[in-house]
Image (cartoon, rainbow, N blue to C red; front, side):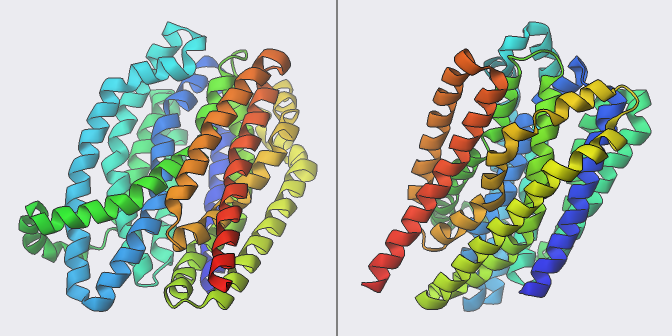
Length: 434
């Protein structure tokens, strides 16, 4: 477990480093100007959808898949192909719906910037929403690999996708301008799918396709969606931070969507690499302990995971606050991003410290709740957190400005969910111990 967690963390650490370099390259190429503001706004919903699917489908699908594989390997393979076909079709429909609703959604989130900004943002977003089917199938493939304890392939695909994304931007930005980022986003997701998908399962398509339309498959689909939809809603609520940050930044001057995005990516990216490997490897083992009703070991492993995750998160935040500014000046200054731009970016760091703690540890608090099948309660808590954070951020905006509103909103959003998840877990332990 420790070896796998370390290797996955190392790969994701490299990916995060590439992404941070990518943020620096993009800032220097395009500057804190309206076009980059528009792309950051346009990619908000596609990125959240990608993150939500990647972060929840495995938690919902893996327990069901492992159970079917334990019963009969062939049954598990057919089940996998059936869901890929069915949800692939559904995801295409959702992409088309998002295309139709893109401009109203953009006006709702970023209307403060005016109609010209919304139209430019919409032109880019309508292309990226069609990556949803690729993301979905990609995540199914990764989940299947996890069921076989093959953790490396999905991480390596993520690494290749990140490298490709950055390479396309560098090579084609002078030709395609800001649209090079749209192209890079789409192709990176497609290449990850090509790497991850378990091709040997395609031989089950002929057996699975006729079964997709049967009542038994419908029942399986309902069971799966009942497990997955609460996680989607809950995860979307947790990752509402991107919408909140960029929407409130749209009330600030030109370039602030870029600044706040850079700051949030720096903190969330670096704290994420300290815990993501632990999350990926920890959850399957936790499921085994919960299913075997080994409460004592489950309690111990959950406590250790939370403690280690918290310590690592705090450590990396201290590194960011005290060391990162030097490297920001060294690396960011140049091109269309001036030294004053860098100073302004660094001045925003204090606003993201508390949210960053939540970003680093939230999933480690959520996974025990998911393992004991209390995700419905977690969903309610996180949805309430969204409403509460938006309300208080809106009030803060009126009296303390946009940056304070973002900080307060993000803090409430993350810690409401963490406190709620810990409460659910402790209640469960108390009931089981009684």
